[in-house]
Structures are given as C-alpha cells and as structure tokens.
Length: 136
Image (cartoon, rainbow, N blue to C red):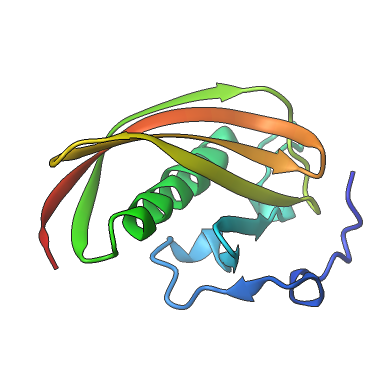
C-alpha cells in the first residue's frame, strides 16, 4: 500500500478545477494525460475497501476527460457504454491513477480503453464508448 501521506503536488500532479466530479470524489488530479485521486476512508465500503461505485465514477470521468482531450475539447460528450473489470481492491490512503488510450474514433463515437492503478497494481481495466454531441 502507498504511504497515506503521499503528496501528489510534490510529484508533479495538479488539481483540476473545476473537476466536474461530485464533491465527494474531489479533488481530481492531473499530470499529463493521466488523472488521479487520493482514496480516503469516506470512500470505503463496510469491508474497508474503496467502494466499487467510487472507482467506477472516477474511471468514467477520467476516460471521458481523455476523450475530450483527444477530440479537441470543443464537444459535449456522453458515456454510452462503460465496461469495468475489477482486478484488485483499493484501500484508503492509496493514490489511484487512471490512464487510457483511444482505440477507435468515428465522427460520432469514440472507443477508449484504460486502467486504474495503485502504484504497480492494476485495480480496474476498463473499456468504453463515448458519444460526441453538439459543440459546447
């Protein structure tokens, strides 16, 4: 497990403001094309591990931000499919990093895959499809 005193800013991460995430999932961090968040005890379920819904929210949002960046940032987006494979538990104190890549893009939809990691451990593998909507 990572050090609960991990300081993302000291490692080149910047807070995304506004993040677009619900307040309970903030702050959202960015470094290059990666997004991160510090798992907290209030993100945990009754077993003491980070709730799958919190991880799903973060992956959905992170992959959507990656799609937005890849499409120039001028389009509105909507998630039309998100498939998650939970690979390992995440614990409070871990700094989780989402990264991904565009696998295919058409005029109206973008296909993406990504991972959520805690250090060297893959926590989630994800694939998704985003619909490109009218420009903002």
